[in-house]
Image: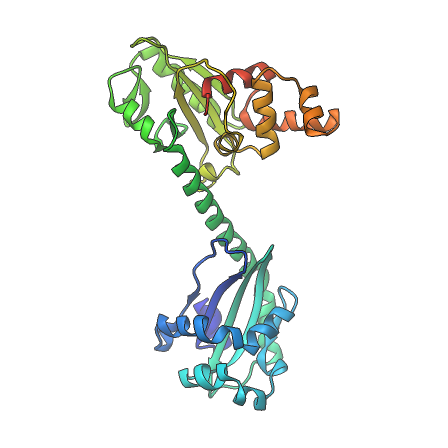
Length: 347
């Protein structure tokens, strides 16, 4: 952006997001310091002047990707009377502005403005063409930034929810290195037992079980990933079942790290399926709400036809949901899916 400012003879750029929905938005960025200003100047604009900014209103009227040059929308006389120009922009040594909406998704709008010093000439047609040439790349960067913020927010909420579970849950990579473990998993790994920390990652006390766990995790992190359940040798009154599930690339926990990941859940198998939270199951497995409801119905003994009747959809639609569900969980058959849900017993 500094190079773009140099080419445009702009002293300052300002990138910010408008979203009336209240969703998390990226922090605004600018190069105020390089122009001899400080962050408080932009904070003053955002709290005191943005609502009266004729430049902002003009930019929002231009189609996304189009360039707003303020002198084409605001006359010199209007600018002299406008408090944004008179009380904020000009006293800071700035005047001429080029504005662009670089991303429009739902209620969110990402905008960038380039402001020239007050003694410079207004932007010309050549400047406008130069900005239009760069807009596709700037827009792609804005989409990636918003996507990473959304993934970070979703992942932090989901990981916080894991700490409320009684089950021991961890996110691991293909080498069984632990990237996150909930409180229950940390307690389990710290205590003597069948599952423990080994060679810097997750492992088993029994050598054969350890080798099998590593194979299952590697298979879950492969493409396509495969889910499986491992029953560990007894080291206490009850046998521990370890469920290994692939995390799809779109899943918040996997996408942030940009490497194949697997979800490892350790629990005592068995128990009733009633009362399982479909929202939590969906978060853990990266399922849509409909797919999570289907999974729980199948695990409770219902059929795909039962699901179609309950959901009010056609048999073909229900089969499509089943195919998506099996693909996301890495299961090849319904019986494998039921075994996985029974081992999870997320309640």
